[in-house]
Image (cartoon, helix red, strand yellow):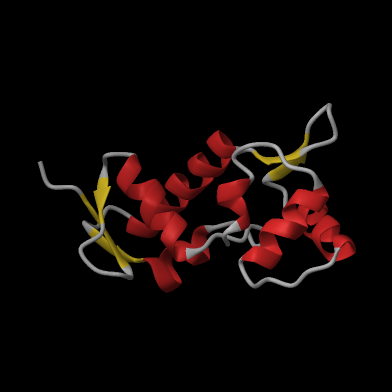
Length: 119
């Protein structure tokens, strides 16, 4: 979901609603507030702004990839990696690929595949 990219820096609910509308996601203030309160990877800071717990989120994604691989060199993102993520965590496929590649341990030879990077 596009909102996670914007939540790498703290935002108000109003800013998130505007960002969502710009990306053709027509949520109102109440819907956005429900979303940020229910997603365990999004937290409210002391200033009242919402942000994503990026490091923890990346670690959860990388752990899901490891479990999906189960010692194999290759795995499918859908359904293998998705099945290893917490049920209350919403992660787009593109984010899984980006996190995997940025770790330096994996590559994505095709849209739905991840493999251990060859040395």
